[in-house]
Amino acid sequence: MSLHNVVEAQRAYFNSGATRSLAFRKEQLKQLKKMLIECEGVLCDSVWEDHKRQPKSTYLLEIGSTITEIDYFLDNLDDWAKPENVAKTVLNLLDTPQIIKDPKGVTLIVAPWNYPHYMVLLPLIPAIGAGNTVVIKPSEISEHSAKAMAECIGKYFDPKYLTVVNGGVSETTELLKERFDHILYTGCPPVAKIIMTAAAKHLTPVTLELGGKCPVIIRDDADLEISAKRVAWGKWMNCGQTCLAPDYVLVTEKSKGKFVDALRKSIREFYGDDIKSSKDYSRIISARHYDRISSLLDKSHGKVLIQDGERDREDLFITPTVLDVQKEDTFMEDEIFGPVLPILTINSFDEQLEYIRQGEKPLAAYIFTRNDRDADRLLAETSSGGVTVNDVIMHLLVDTLPFGGVGNSGMGRYRGKFGFDTFSHEKSVLKKGFFGESLLFARYPPLTDKKFNQ
Ligand code: NAD
Image 1 (cartoon, rainbow, N blue to C red):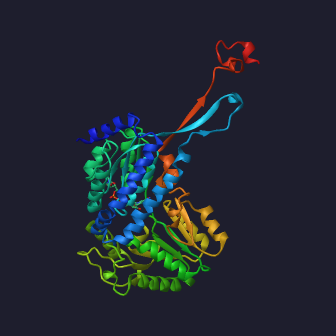
Image 2: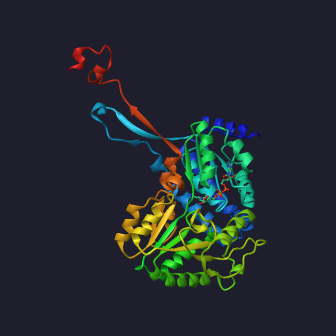
Image 3: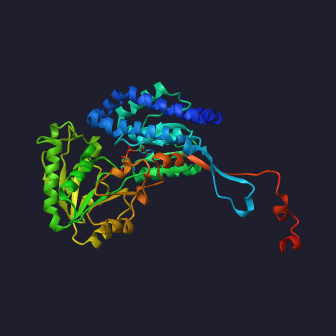
C-alpha cells in the first residue's frame, strides 16, 4: 500500500468514529499492554542487537515504565476525557459553557534510536488515550528495534488504526507530505526544523521533543559522593546516549578533586575493573556516531581525568571519559550524546548561572546543593525544559509533571494528562436553550440609538 493510502485508510477509520468511545480507547491500551507483556523478549532482544544493552535494563527503562504509564492512563482516562464545565459569565448565566476533549484525528509519531521502544510507546499511549489513529515512524538507525516494533504492532493492531512505517530519510520525507492532524517528533533540532516545515504546509500542530546540553552544577555544600553517584548513573546509562543525561559539569576548584574521585569510584562500582566486559555498559549506536565522538576526543584540549580502557571502533566501545576542559573546548559546543563528561571549573555561582544562560536552553538543568536558595536561583535565573534538584533525569518519572523542552530543546509537552491534552483538541462548547431572548435582544440589527444607549 502506498504511504498516501496508509494515511487515508486511517483517516477513513477515524472518520467512522470507531476510535472515539472511551471503551474502545481503554481496550486498545489494554491490548498494547498485552503486546508488551507477550513481546517483551523480542523487544528487549532487539535493543540488545542495536545497543548491546542488556535485556533486564531495557525492560526497566523501556517496557516496564511503559506498562506503568498505560496503567496510569487506564486509572485516569475517564476523568481526563470527561467534558469540563467552566465558569459562567454574566451573559450566559442560563447556559452551559464546556470544554470537550476531542481526538485530533490521524497522528504521526517520529522516534529516535536511543530508547527505540520507549520513544515510540510513551507518545503512543496518549495518542491512543485521546482517541486518535497513529502512524509510527521508528528510527532506521536502531534497525533491529524498528523491525521488532513493526512486527509486534502488526500482530496486535489493525493498520487502519495503528501502523508502523519503517525506512530512512526518503520514506520519512514521503510520509511528511501527507496531512496529519498532529505530529510528535523526538530527535535533534536540525531534523525538527524539517518536520516543522513539512507540517506547516498542512498547518499541522507539532510537538517537538529535542535535546541539548544539560548542565549540572555541583555546589561546595553538596554531598559529593551521592552527587557523583547520581551523575555517573545518568551519564553512563545507555553509554551517554540519553536526552536527559548530564552533558557537562560546572564545579569549583575546591570540590573538583573530591567530585572526580567519587565519580571514579562510582564508575568502578557500576561497571567493574574491565568496563568493556561489563553487561551493564552499552555501546555507541553506529560507526557514524562513534566517529563523531572519537573526532571530538581527538580535537579536545581537555585534560583526561578518567579514562579506563582503549577506544574500539569494531566494537563501537568508548569507555567512560571525564575531561577537565576550558570554555572553548570542542566538547562545550554541541550536545555530546556519548560517554564523555567534560568538567568546567567556574568558582563563582553567578558566573556558573551566566554560563548556562548564554547557551541554548537545555532540556534539563541539575544542581546539587543543600542550600534551597541556590536551587531557587537556578530555577529563577535559567530556562530549561525541566529541573531535578540533587539528582538527574528523575523528574521524567513523575507522572503528574509535564515532560518537554523549551526553545532549542523543544516545544510542547506530554506524559500523563499533559500527553492526553497534547493529543486532544479542547473544543469550546456553549449549550443554550430557547429562552432569555429579552436579555440579548440588543445584538440583533438594527442597532438603534435606543438599544445602543441602554
Ligand atoms: P534519529 O537520527 O534517529 O532521528 C530521529 C527521527 O528522525 C528518525 O525516525 C529519523 O528517521 C528521522 N529523520 C532523520 N533525518 C530526517 C530527515 N532529514 N527528514 C525527515 N526525517 C528524518 O535521531 P537523532 O536525531 O540522532 O536523536 C538524537 C537526538 O534526540 C538527541 O539530540 C537527543 O537529545 C534527542 N532526544 C530527545 C528526547 C526527548 O524526549 N526530548 C528523547 C530522546 C532523544
